[in-house]
Length: 109
Image 1 (tube, rainbow, N blue to C red):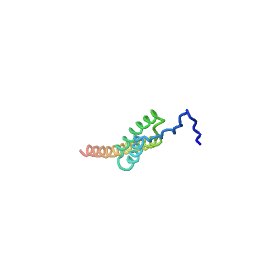
Image 2 (cartoon, helix red, strand yellow; image 1 turned 90 degrees about the horizontal axis):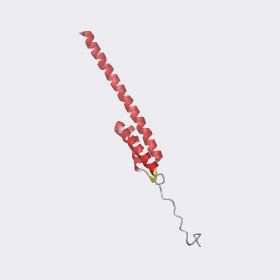
Image 3 (cartoon, one colour; image 1 turned 180 degrees about the vertical axis):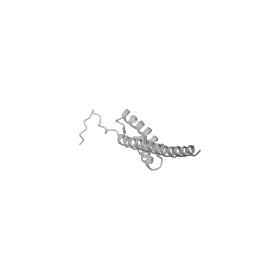
């Protein structure tokens, strides 16, 4: 004998939440930014991470993966900062060498 009473709709389980594809892309590109693609990977991770969080906020009953998106954002922003600092160091180093060489050339003439 069933507990379902006639005239009442049968209870439906809540729909399964789907992981955002953009959140997965953000995490994967955040990891790849540290391994293979520093600038391109970090920018992709940042953009898709923000898009995923927006998508998840618009449809919280359907979409999941906010943690993945946040992890992708953290990895992307961290790699972007490290890349920009490394680029700054390279420019300062070579700029200093060029400055010293030009100063030496001026003093010898």
